Length: 634
Image 1 (spheres, rainbow, N blue to C red):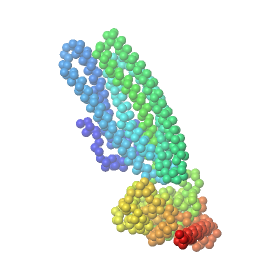
Image 2 (cartoon, rainbow, N blue to C red):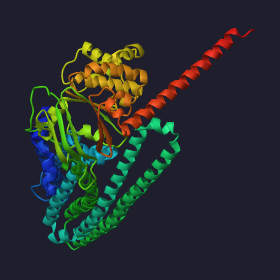
Image 3 (cartoon, rainbow, N blue to C red):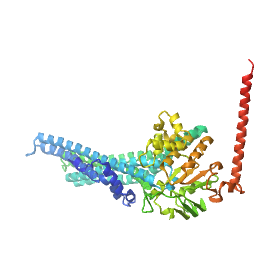
Image 4 (cartoon, one colour):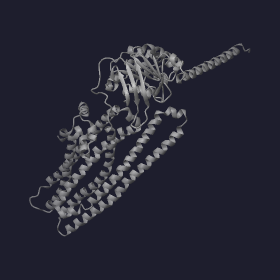
């Protein structure tokens, strides 16, 4: 009955609705810690109240057992008149044991349901929240740190609700109920029995503060260790290619050793707490036994009252000693709650808002007027005084050395970052007035380092389209990206081939072309190609460039490239240097000007001519050797 009354019914829709209706950002900013913890329980508050009520019943049954012992010894064995039969007394012992066991079980069960519910909501919310945080947040946060908070810290919060908080309530209930019971035997004895309790609590609070600091340092070091492992596994090919295994192992050993030192220090704090409180609690209990024995000898207590007291005082002293342990352990849960709260407090990027949106397709006319960008307040501008006009369907090429601001500029278009100076107008409307979600649906991006999910090739190509896609459509964009023949000829399972983590089973060029196909299937009004042909050979680049001539028709396209040959047919070429546009125009115009563009063009031309001459020389040597071997007499 109690279980059905307090247990929440499993309903994922309800959980999701609660997640949408209750903003955890408001909860974690609550200044009152108890109110914050209460609000975190959301739909499980009733279950937690049921767990607390069950604890009260179990504590009452435990105390009643010792009082029944007193009745059995003093009244039944003492020969008092009008006592209950032995069978009734024995049935009372059994009933109290069953009641205590049942309600203890119910308390644990309901507390566990609450803890799992809190962990479920936190994980779901945090995962959703992380995806909605702005790029600036992810730029400064390490992946391992976020993984630590989303896993280990949430599990510490789960343990807080499942064990530590409910156990603290149990200890307090046991103390109150048993203290009242001892008072009914002798109020003087009751006061003697709790002299050490304030001392234990003071020591526990001291250790609580010490553990809180040391646990936070330990968690931070564990997050650093997780980041190191994650980076090493992600870059395992680079590590092996540069033969840096020993260096990486040494780096890991140092971080792991520091974690060991911090962990040892944390455990030493726990280990110091136990003997100190054991000595105090043991001395308190022995003192209580001695005083109660003296009172029994003097006739102030009966034998039954003494035995009842001996059982009751144990359920006061040791639970209070455990309360100190729980206070120390609860610090870990509260520290983890604080670490998770730091992430949740971060302001989300408003992807959907009451900004400009439309069902119509963007035309793609862009006007940059004296645009500037700095990533953080007080830092230098990474883009300065950027001005140009891109008409619908034009191809804008961005050329310049690494770090000159090309990628920063195109990141402004989908509003990954907000420009800090000047103005950008898209189809006659300020860019920062567009709904971000609407913008990103109409802008296709092929990254310089494409990311593929651990799914099939088909799933990766259709990712983010938001509609049912036919196989013909998938194959059409794959052909346009010059990858279809590779898929059907080199992979036995074709488009159902799993690509592995980050597409590790594919070559760099294959990953790049799949990413291009994915963007083309989206059919965006604005196309951003961030050096998207850098990972392919010259033959494949020529195939992709030929396909792009048709596919970029009607789209405003931004092409970032390092090779002049990739941008020669652009309507506008913008040459960047130190965040500024230092040259602009078409290929024929820029080649005729003295400047960065012509120097790059001439250097790359010489390099290609040298490469072709070397290749021709190698072919001649090979042909001569073959001719010599053919006519060689035996």
